[in-house]
Image (cartoon, rainbow, N blue to C red; front, top):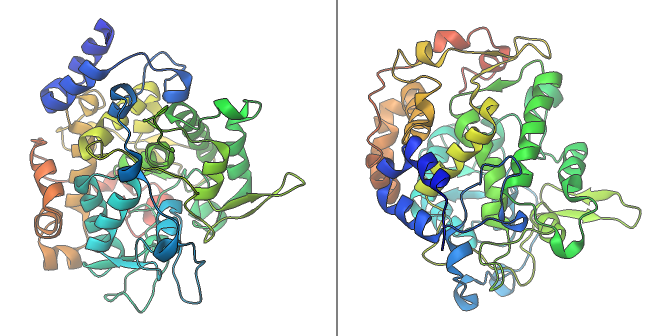
Length: 426
């Protein structure tokens, strides 16, 4: 198995080898050429391959995800919560998390692992953060507020620029449309048509396709949404996950394609979309389902925080504008980036963000420094909550050896109405 000197040099340059030596070594040993079906980038910079892609590992018995029996599709009923995340909606519709759409931290960690093969570290981090920001510190709603969650939990729908963000693939920007969870059909069609004209047996909504679409949506938000805000957490970590997770989790694994192929039918299933005879679309939010004969990530090939970090860095390398923290100032096409050095009191700058673990550290530490007082008064810090409820996530983050960030200069955000309207969201 060959890998290029440029690949090694790139990994060294961005600090991946120093940050995760065992992961980097495995990636390099297993790295092969990346074809169009497997997520390569037309820009010339390859996206990180799935380790299963070149190892060829596939076990149908262990990777099969049932949509029968106890996990048969059941649409949401009155009072059931569904929201902006199609994957979570599908999990609730198939009872991999409570059908109500309200789950505990453990529900979300085990559910995302069983259905998608999300690493316990990444699943733990996202579950604990959801409970802290959207819920009552132990549970949260994938939709809106509900009496099933205490402490006035907002749910995922009510967490704009905290957990839910602008530049969603198929959901509209909240302050542009007044809605952040129903499918925007123009956006859906734009995504779906990214593979227009491609023969059915060659269709794959892979990372290259999705990141190109993300760059288009990013520019669309700049030109159309006067309140567009790209925050240090919502923009750097949440927004890319909305795209990366589509392929990394929804691609159907097989012996021929252990890294997964995301074709039109599988994409429509997980987004709950029906293509009608006249070419129009219907369904959407609340209709999401797991297709027949669908296989998740390989056991031992879970999508972990280190793997997510690799994807984040590569995406930002191909599309540097994704790291532009800032927003429009009340009118379209007024995007103004903040100075990262001033924002972090000199700890980070635009160059060092792509070194080592700094990109994830920056996003994580921003959350740490901007949690509401009521939350920090109860849990002390997000690190404390992770140690208590998600030890895998706590251990993974502890190994990052992040630079010390004493605080965030949030005054830089005051000129962005998308920030102030969101209750000082990030």
